[in-house]
Image (cartoon, rainbow, N blue to C red; front, side):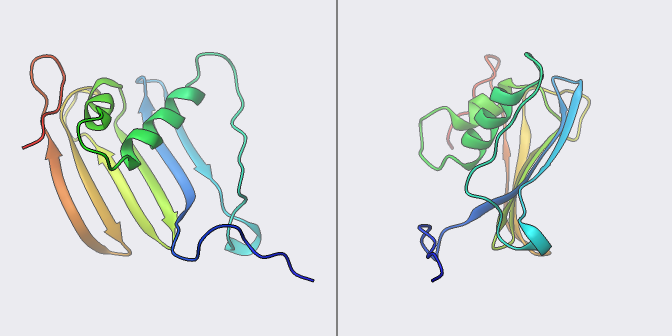
Amino acid sequence: MSKKSSIPPHAHRIASVFVEDLFGLHTYDIKVGGPSGGPGPTMVVLYGENGTGKTTILQLVYHLLGKEDNRGHRTYLARIPFRRLRVTLDPPTTIEAYRTGPDLVGSYRLRINRGNTVLAEAEAIVDPNFAVRNA
């Protein structure tokens, strides 16, 4: 007897999380795929030394994927030092926040891709308090 998944068929699973230059020190490439590239596990454990970014990675993913307005999601991303944050979902969709200049905090670009097609792209511009305002 096969066990049915409790995840709705329209839901996306996180397949990988990539964070470059977190705090200007750490780069992580976390793969969550299953055997032979199939669906990954429903639970992943992050472990490591104190202060290496485990909680920050989880918060970055939460705020990158957060869809609610006026909850501080974009401002949180502006205030955390990183070069690139990319979450790849299964079915394949990539949500990414990245900075192209020398600064690891402040304004950044957001992009959503499905395969090689860019679905949306925007710039999150900060005010002097590093807050991102909705247009």
